[in-house]
Image 1 (cartoon, one colour):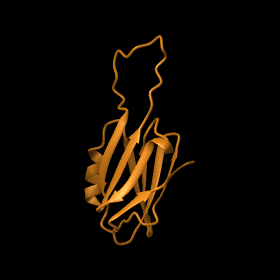
Image 2 (cartoon, one colour):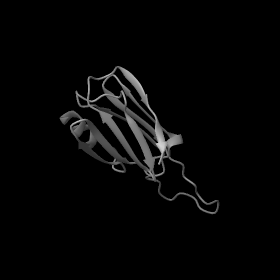
Image 3 (cartoon, helix red, strand yellow):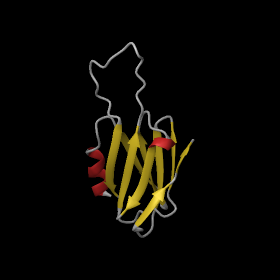
Length: 118
């Protein structure tokens, strides 16, 4: 789990994350403002959690950017703990907060995690 902890420290400053653990699973909670289930892809590939998200920026026509710091795209790969797997994983996003439940088991080579709008 230390590799995951280290990787979370390297997330962009605009992304905040918590990792929780039970006997059966890990729960990863990520703040992804502006991201919806339709603009988010999450998968497990080769022992890594791959998260790709996009947020839209609605700028009123009479305004222009003076400064733009909020990234539109998120592309993150995080190492899974050795006992975590994507098999049976569940995810939901509600108001820009993504919750992923990753069951503990032997790692599967690749799987896509469905994300529902909560």
